[in-house]
Image 1 (cartoon, protein in one colour):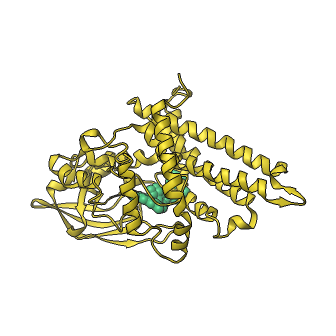
Image 2: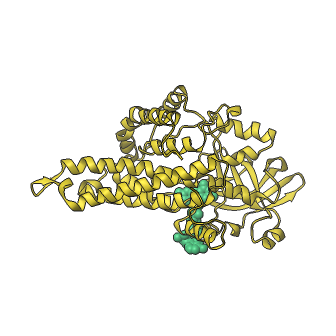
Length: 392
Ligand SMILES: Cc1cc2nc3c(=O)[nH]c(=O)nc-3n(C[C@H](O)[C@H](O)[C@H](O)COP(=O)(O)OP(=O)(O)OC[C@H]3O[C@@H](n4cnc5c(N)ncnc54)[C@H](O)[C@@H]3O)c2cc1C
């Protein structure tokens, strides 16, 4: 057992860190200003410039298989990169990747959807959630009815990330009501790839954060049978795979963000004086710093273990739920303490803390809420699927 990053991992961590410090953090004031004025956080030209720089630095397709032009660096690297990039709120992601479930496509689908997504020529989104079915994904109502060589989709999806910008959606719909009922929603549903120009509409949802997901509306949208992703009636597991993939990465994001915020609080506490001395000399402040540091370290190891386990080809779902639950809660606690340490300034829009405060709250809701992670973790233990201390 070796609890340190490898030289290669350290090198990637340092390179990404420099990229974030040199290219992204200097844009933070512009992003805050743009958002205050209701403009896009970053202009299209700036986004394109950053993409080019990331490509030139070799950070493109970090986790994409080499046969698709990626670097295929594995999940540990993915975790390390996510932690570094999350040290800024500038909305930039190292691209060159595609949704995990698109790799289940046949050759034709890979050509039409997977490769253009990796290359950044097409934008995707994934739609499972509906107004009446969030945590209980088995309860979806959207239907797909066969008509000749096409399927006709009707229903509504909601809270779909990227749903306003996407060129196509991977959408889950009921294709056999009887099987769906008999299997309590686990079968009888299918994943379809639906191009926007096949006729679905989207509507922006305003949220507490600086970006919004979308509602998607399907009214007699006709989809050719060639656009079924994976197997007919077996789309539910694809959906769970999509949701599960990003789960532990939420924890990684929380670690990166919390680390940056805590550093801000440490710096500020040494500068800010009250009653004749810096607030860093007050035990009340020191304890908030200490508690935050402890929780960040705990979350970091949970995330790295979830990533490492996946890299070993093992099932990491239990660890992913633990890393997501703890990481998301740690992140919201740390941002709250950091705001407290900054006093009134923390509450203003002069500093980015309130922005992070709003953004971090989402971590406890999407990709499975706190409560659903607890349901999963306790079920695994109560049913004996996982033993305590199994993953060391
Ligand atoms: C910004 C954003 C982006 C999103 N992106 C996507 C996306 O790209 N694609 C997609 O398909 N979905 C997406 N979602 C949907 C997201 O996954 C759901 O919001 C989430 O799963 C919760 O579902 P819900 O909102 O319907 O809450 P509900 O399921 O209605 O839950 C309400 C409350 O009840 C609790 N609860 C529910 N069931 C139980 C239970 N059995 N035991 C105890 N407590 C329970 C929940 O934890 C929650 O506190 C997104 C959501 C948001 C907010």
